[in-house]
Image (cartoon, rainbow, N blue to C red; front, side, top):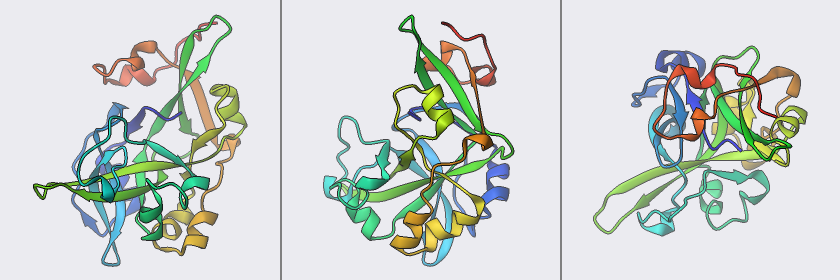
Length: 226
């Protein structure tokens, strides 16, 4: 679930989130995957800043040595208990990842994994709740990385990605500041399953399965394979 996603235009993301400081630089993309650097918004000295982070959290205790498969996402119930995430959670190292949409796969009766593109009906740019950490290696190289928080899947996600119990935590606009600045209790209250009536999904080409492809054709509707 949410192994790949799409990036909006940078200016559109800045209009949506209005960060105080802008350090990021990116272009629209249609096939973002693990271990790439992605745009994120976090707090720094009380101000929001737009930065690039590696997708797949590497905790501080890893000392800059990425594991073979750093976690791309974390169930909200594990934020406080997982050794990967609890320090970041306790230190309020929360971030927002700007998206235009994401992909999910449905296993058909013919045992084919049909990819779907999922977006919000009336929000061309939206934010996912995430957590981040900073890991420093022996050579003082710093890796800042992030993972996406997950919540129980809504009806659309259960139907589209059959068998998946979770979905990415899509933040409502009114909860952007709460997620970044609120207490643990307030931030956790912002982690809600987004309403299925505000989302759309359509089948797309299996070209999305290749990491070498990144073009607008990936999100165009196709006829689903049975």
